[in-house]
Image 1 (cartoon, rainbow over the protein chains, first blue to last red):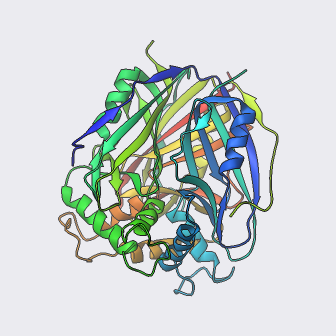
Image 2: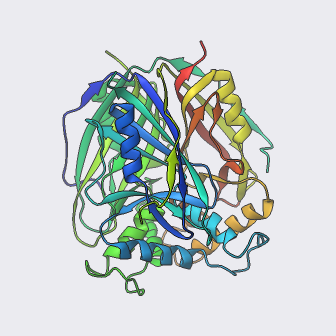
Image 3: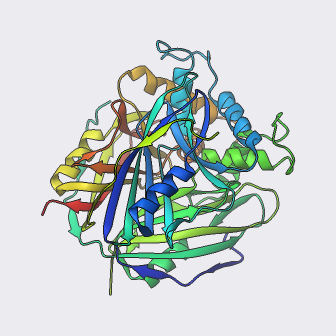
Length: 157
Length: 157
Length: 157
């Protein structure tokens, strides 16, 4: 359907003049979600980011990225339940040599995100009030996960 | 499998010289899809966008973004059915204080997109013939949803 | 949960000075995955890409993009099985005029990715060891699929 009501703020423009990249390593504790919002904010502060976009890219195929509610921890618990129902273990997968949790982990990665982009406005990510950025570990055991952080835009010199 | 046949056009390069950002507000009518393609195109026209990329970012965890067929409305109806089957209400969710449609809405958001990027070539989005950009409302009731629009690239001065 | 252990490398910054775009055409063989990692790497080499981000955008609603394990082909076979279970044919879809595989193809596209962003560092994509970039064909028959490739960042002149 066509929108029956919408509005748009005036646009603001600035020159794009910098790219800043960094690698974030996260030690997960096994299946579940790790909040990295503060780490991304810290990266942007140190980069002097003003206006632009930050890209997050996870260098793995059995862990992924998602933006989700950061208020009630039971949401994250239910997201884990939902992913387990959508990609169950022992469901006749051909790829089973790396453990029963491995193929479901690949499927969960496919259904969520490998890369995320978040606009940066006035020096801060334009996240909604309840949005947190999470690394989703889909393997049962703890893993060290690498996420590339990259800001493109205007920065304080 | 390796591609058995592929081809690529010659590359074209231009300088990246501008970032333009704006906030789009959409009043949804409850569960369903709202086409925002024209609004994004209008934003790009006003920004004088020539070549680059437009990022869309929705600032919510119970509504999301998707690019889907814009020809037959029954496709959107079936997408709603599919999401309801993948994330049903009253399925034993721990998070149930905000109504039976709330936790399914978070799951549907996780399975679709919070951010989208669409290349802009010769002043227009490089969408395919049948592609429309949609806000997907996953809550039962109408909501006001905010989407950040951001163009990075070359613009007419 | 908060990360109990994480670290981040020092940031590096360079000027953003170029946008290079190209169109990749892939002939799929019907349902399944086509590895386009080498083609994207070749595009970046020819563009002289040094540091920045490459965006991939597929111009279709019944084929999509994903980054997945490139080592064991049985992973791709299981991903196809998983998508078939999540979006089965003949499941009471309203949109059925284009064949039983059409509506499931739209759903599979919604659950995976239309656009991907991969950071480019020191002239190469920052992919993990086991990550390959795939076009996922969701229709039963072969199709010609178009993917826009776009690099934004610093390039050798």
